[in-house]
Length: 268
Ligand SMILES: [Zn+2]
Image (tube, rainbow, N blue to C red; front, top):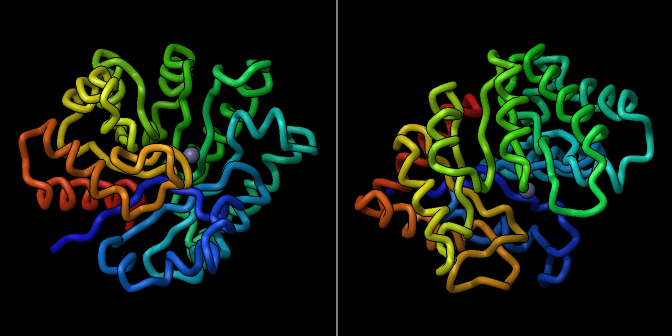
């Protein structure tokens, strides 16, 4: 039987220290490894990107994405945007070193217009420069888009050679169809299981089966019935069941398709 592939998690997050033995206790458990065949551990700053790499090297099933998240660009980055991006570039520019470090994507990058105050110009500078890196080195990207659908779509269209995934997607079905037409993948998190999220399930139904991924965004966004708890990849069974329900397919079929799709996007 196929195993679940978690296309987006943050196992470096200090919230995992609340677990006895930390994230390592979870990731090295037999129960976890029986269910989970792949995890992309996604950085949100240069520093956390290094932690992602370090963790990914410890586990066969884990890969790393490196990049600067729009909110962290505003709140955590101490250097200038050019200096921050230069450090990300140094991680991805050499193919051999990239393989050694198990880096499979640039992310997470994008726009976040939810957390106030928003510095749109700064967010745009980080987003554009990291899209340019992805174009230069032929790497997929992992996109964060919170309440910024129009600006996100417009920016993606300006980098037609870059492909990637819209993580925990909250775009409308109409916009998703446009994004998919341009070769993109779309990923759904625990939000697809929330009772009041019929719009998310409608959007999910608009994604062709060969472009859909699932994820946790752990430690955040735990699916029903774990909502509110600290999320982890094993809870993704509930997310896969909800997606299977949207497509009237079996759980096994959704696990197999989403895992295949993730391996295709990240070149595994
Ligand atoms: Zn995330």
